[in-house]
Length: 129
Image: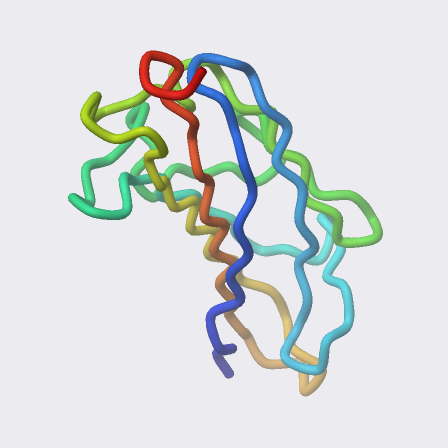
């Protein structure tokens, strides 16, 4: 059983390594631990154009590539400087979307999936003082 898309917005600064945090939950709102995840992928793109950022297109990030998920379902993604690059220098703030798709075993024992989207507004240092 799939969930509705859960989205939040955070701020970041161009070229500055950021730590992105979120919580993964099942359809009933219970945290999903890293050990319970069967899969976790990240697609990271510029919101307006859909251009993939830093080659993160359905990248397997289950406890890899700077991403960890704790026993309490807490996601921690330590971004690289290339993850907070500006693609369109005309924008003062460029919106990036980090789409995490995950698989786990549902309460009924059947495979289940979920999505977590995080909108990251990256401040363009050449435009924002």
